[in-house]
Length: 372
Image 1 (cartoon, rainbow, N blue to C red):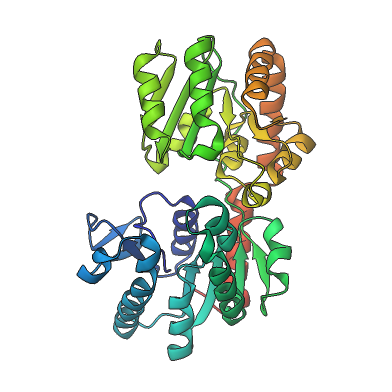
Image 2: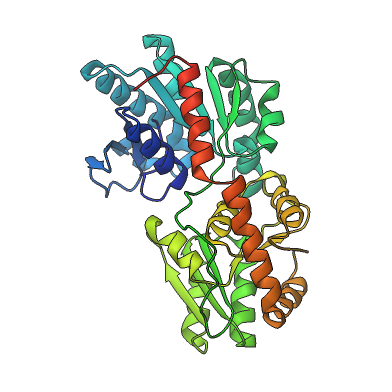
């Protein structure tokens, strides 16, 4: 597997690698340690992790985007060294910023190539970063390289149609679902209604207004964990507040689901003006489902369609006023929270759970003639 982060907080990659290792595949994750602080090689839960670090020349470049091409060269060389030591049967590339490495490996060694599209990558570059002028280049790169993949794995049903005109091989949906860790629905046991959000702390999620509402209102608790541009304002609000807003910082991946289950409601608002958010299948949805907790999402998104259809949360306008009204409605109606939580857990049991997605992943490998 080729990965453009350090492989410390990537639940999709962790789940897929663990599933493959569990059935007998020998899995190596070649990851990019951009800060140069992680072990260069280690083994975790049966998965070998090998990391490359920025060279001196890469460190001189002012932006991460300009380090991509050197990373592709560096990762390609290291991947080939590993292949010579023990030949790989397949290269599994996570997102577009690793696909050039996989295509290079396939052309030189003939290994099978799986492209795992976590995101609508060009849209993400254009809408969620300061690199919008490069959106067209990444779209062109995607159109050029995706046909080389033997199979395309996508993280949401909306990506099926997106890749339909590009992919030559099959397109298989592997959702970012979670394992069914609990046998039955259990109601929360909090003195006051508690919200939880653990993820990217970006400014396009109304997280700072949400934290301000918690401090201002004081009638509910809110736990916010993760990292990103909104970290510092949320940390400051938590420090000056009355104790009902708790900033968790970075939460270990194995604590996310238990912390979610300990709450009453999952927060997951995304700015619907961004097409990438309208089409996304957010991780928070799947965490809410397997823990049996109602979720708060934004109207006009794929997630909202699922939540409304299953009656497992509320879909609201993307505004502070709508958020305030939804919080008050949820506080006033604990019976509705329980009904929606039970519906969420039922949806996880019936449809959105890792057992189902693991079966799709292993079938995709088997259909390429790959066996442990």
